[in-house]
Length: 399
Length: 149
Image 1 (cartoon, protein in one colour):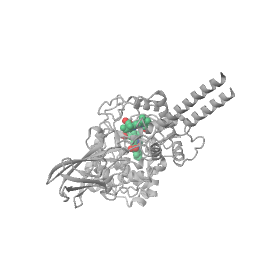
Image 2 (cartoon, each protein chain N blue to C red; image 1 turned 45 degrees about the vertical axis):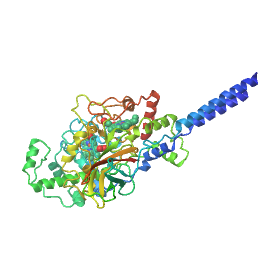
Image 3 (cartoon, helix red, strand yellow; image 1 turned 30 degrees about the horizontal axis):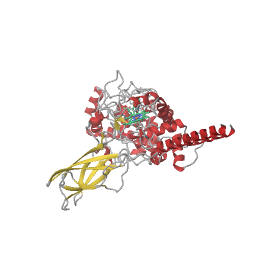
Image 4 (cartoon, rainbow over the protein chains, first blue to last red; image 1 turned 90 degrees about the vertical axis):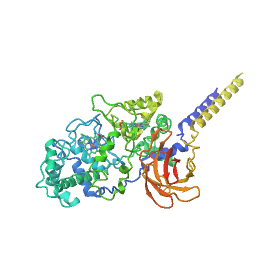
């Protein structure tokens, strides 16, 4: 009997050793290493914004980001929706500023690595993006003439130390914008070319200062990153860093059969591109066609890379120049979001369609057809255990 | 009697162990990379044999996720450079059913049959297919290059 029990113990040990070791193939190890934060290249200089790496500009940008004075009603700042202690988002399905918007607030960690901004990529630089909520009637609901006056009154000296002398704004109306109310539009049309150019210049510089600040928002290192480094170096993981069998299964699915890594790729878990994944629209919101409608908007934006407010040469405008303009796959295509930190900031998707990671993974498993256009997702038929494992893995990106 | 049971059990145990090892080996065997076996040559005749085309990254290396330029060199079968060609680029990832994430274009003629194809971007690893429609004085032809990342 003792022989038998010894034999059974040996057997059990052999089986456990077989399962307990992180059994990753060389190809899997290579993919895992490519997802680790240590593989993130350092931020490239943004030649379209010559203040992008000027500390005084970032400091002013930070002030403006948190300043409720930067809004039509004096109640909303960027940080109303992009909350510093909530990964720069607000936990709501659709953001609320001066009004309720139609999309979910995007978290901002590592955003400066992106070529396109917003869920549909309708802006092509971080500084041009920052100008959009300032004048959106549902977000900060201001107008650019008022912002220029406000900067002169509140931050004139700081502004001039960074950007040089402010223009003469004494004859510029208090409220005017090509995008505002009818009265603001009329006031804008009545301004001289010099005045509109001056106001646009101050407005663009506001965006450039805010962008300089946003460049400092970096994704933090997670348990997954520590695991990936241990795997790459062959080190024995510290007790909490070691992955459970469930997390290992989830990671293997993510980079294997579930195909997640085809879009959620690289150290930020995004290919920076746009895909239709069949996420259903939200009832009662206006029609949202994603990337296909954003193409014209970014082309028409006077602050885009081809516009007069870009610094440096047009060599930096490759993304805009070689943008895909009309392809059926742009219909209801949205930007692949980073998955870092996602587990602790539900809800999910461009209009907060799903309230938990379980719902997200169930969506990928079933892969329903898109209401318009064609979803790139194919049904995965994941078992309960596999769905749970994917969620467990996603959590390691937020610990 | 006892010793017979012992042998039976040991035999069963060994068989189970063997099955376990086989399962582990099978489950962790490296999968053949997607697109293995595809023709990834960088130089070939065009579909109707009108030209010889070669396609190389301008800076020698492929960087995933970054805009980059490649050089398409067009020669006649006799080896003379093809000048003044109009080139249209299309493509995608056949295994994922999607097109290119950018619209690459022939932006410059660099002489000696060499054309700069700018605005290429490979957003993920796998097999990419690039299709060139070429039209020059000698006629029109097409060529497909596969790029494996």
